[in-house]
View 1 (cartoon, rainbow, N blue to C red):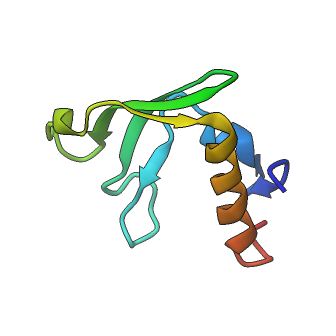
View 2 (cartoon, rainbow, N blue to C red; view 1 turned 90 degrees about the vertical axis):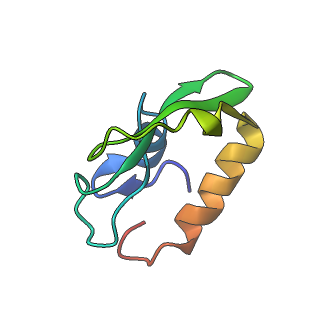
Length: 89
């Protein structure tokens, strides 16, 4: 369920941070090659913009702004959380 904790943090709080980590390095260290984006959440939409890499000053402008209907976005997050091993959800 979306109210579950991931590493002690409420799941929706984790994914609705202003600049969540979208992708990370396979090493598992959050500060290693993370791709982040500015995230704006409204009652109806979730928008990602301002993509950046925390290790390099690369230009991600070609990604533009990605907008998602909030109900479908949260449904997808729910499915991803349900797919985590039981020890993480």
